Length: 249
Image (cartoon, rainbow, N blue to C red; front, side, top):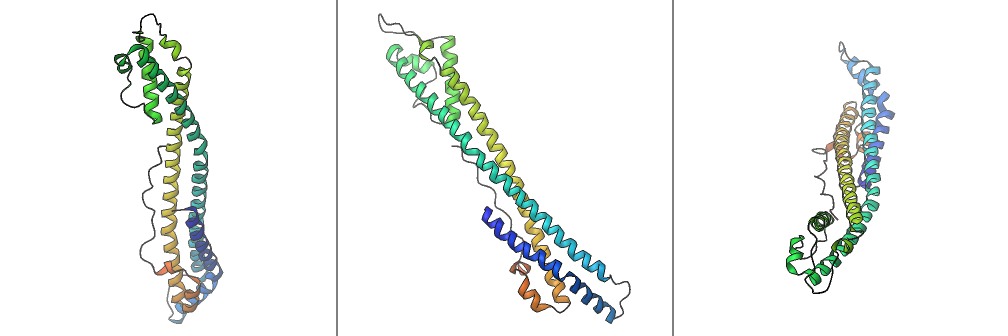
């Protein structure tokens, strides 16, 4: 669900809470009068009935407050993502550019076999995680067995050609880790928000139906029709769908 939906549903719940508190005493006095009219023994007191109505309103108020807090936390978490993803993309672009240039140098000076030996297969990847893995593999390969030039009279220094790439690959690795952390935190915040929504939705249905029944039981049908949302007569409380997967890019 969206924050706007939570805002709209929250306004409905606020109205329900206010209605319960406003009419609790009247409902209680009318109900006690009904019990007295048939001389019902051990009937609850007006104070007990009013207290129960107010407690139900407070419970709904609490679940609504929890939902609003959870939605604010999720919104803040989503707001943090942009800078982390932007940094990851910058490092990925830098690493890819360096690897493409290095691959061309190796191909020109050392041939296809040297390119393949370093792990270059097909197009240089664009995915940041794949770029991190390729960059680490190329650096390790050059450190272990640097490719040699096949061109007569030409010296090719692979380590010199990769100067600065080590730092870029390390930065990309850190950025990828930061993205994974952000995604975990976002998913956790989304799960908490969804759980809070489901709890609120169930409680709102329960509170609306209860107040509707209490008003009608004491003859306040017209008031029930005016005050209560249509959810009082609905079937099951609304639940959130499974959240969409977080974007990878």
